[in-house]
Image (cartoon, rainbow, N blue to C red):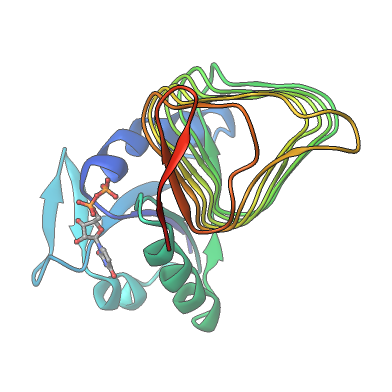
Length: 218
Ligand code: UDP
């Protein structure tokens, strides 16, 4: 029996990642079907020409093997869905666009989505379910935790550590750290779009502006 792939989430994030997922399978010469999973669908439906169904219906599909990319921008939702998939013994799927550039000694854990024009430079470690949206980059010697999200055009320079569940808004720029003295974006921090981050951001802080300043501390 065949393998069935799915994109979990058929909203903006999922619909933009479907073409990336198609490129992933085409590179692997794998002709398997890719469907959408979205719990908003009570009945089997179609989105952009692909079958779309809720998670129960997906579980009932008769494929021998299944793999799922979680394409939901909210990292807490990604974590919840990843936990459910693990409980059900369904593997996380990672996809990257054909034109991504991945340099040397890069480790990326399961469930990553690397959109078109993303660059991951050398000596980088990235955790589970990372999303790097269009035109984002990660420069050398960065360490990125689990469930981190980059909106489009994030410039993450060298020697930066980003902890779990941080969200970096569109076009934000983060100053490089130094070897042994990384600039740290703390767990669950939010960097506003277009922010210019020149120093470490505490866990749970929301920063905006140039230079980025804390506007909220959770
Ligand atoms: N969703 C789901 N199951 C969940 C949580 C979310 O199917 O447990 C779906 C939800 O119905 C929506 C999508 O995931 O279609 C999330 O899309 P959202 O509009 O929040 O933004 P996006 O992540 O696409 O930017």
